[in-house]
Image 1 (cartoon, helix red, strand yellow):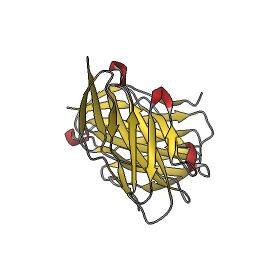
Image 2 (image 1 turned 135 degrees about the vertical axis):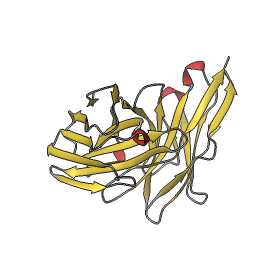
Image 3 (image 1 turned 90 degrees about the horizontal axis):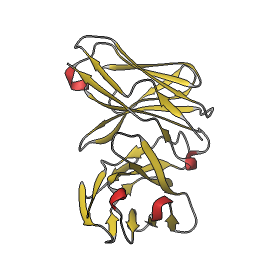
Image 4 (image 1 turned 60 degrees about the vertical axis):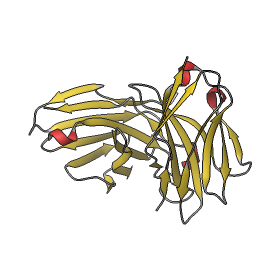
Length: 114
Length: 114
């Protein structure tokens, strides 16, 4: 079984500042890692994913994440946020074999202030 | 574009009613999922299905059942709705053998039970 911990329930930040949303996972098998974004009153959209290879992955809207196997982390970063980045962000993990059922963290609410 | 369509964005039902939430996907995905989303709790898996007529319980199946008679359609059933089932319900789908593609989500159904 896998589990995901998002360490911050809410992250306030000013526009144009950098941001990091933290995610740690646990698993006894190899995993795929994902970040999803949810804008108000919408479903989840895939932001980026790590499957294998380079530990730095780039996604949409200028976001990137770094996989750190030794620390079992997959933190999401953006060097300069915009008001439109205000949303809920979910980290997810699934086993890289088997049924691929994603397990989600509790979410981090990113609030960008002008 | 992949499309996962949930039949209703908003529903209001009375305690004790039988409630059907419908989800249709157009990508020929084998896997389909129903999640419940509550503030501070993230997404919790209710049921998933990996094939027609096949289903597995997730983390919180109590009070719910599902039906998958056709590959593209996955229904969530609340046999006797209760106020503690007031929540946002999210349907998702994915390929069974290609977990690295991630899951695709519908827009969500916000259910209120009064």
